[in-house]
Image (tube, rainbow, N blue to C red):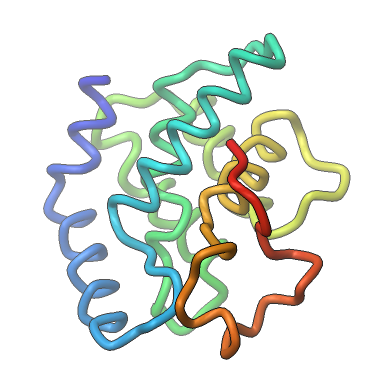
Length: 154
């Protein structure tokens, strides 16, 4: 996980998460902080292991850490996040093919249709990380009832 830690410690990433924290300082809905990213990573790891998928755990953690890092950039966060991953991952020792795989998963993490296993796991883990069943702001949330987690789920 050395390369994932390099992403986390990199000044570019630190600047992005500080910008997100500032933008969400008064947000009552789900936040897009490190806790969320690590929840996504850990839930994804469980899915990968349970489904016997051939997905590198370190790459998945990198994708989870970066998947929402493009928020508040002025363009859709999946596109901005993929651009950030393309810039940052090579600086942290990831190969071109690893970077491309993570960028694709980040671009696709907002939709579940026709996605690769890697992208599908990121999408699923992202959605399952939300505790809608106990959210105090559920009545004001824009997520449809069908999209919400009504029970504890990995």
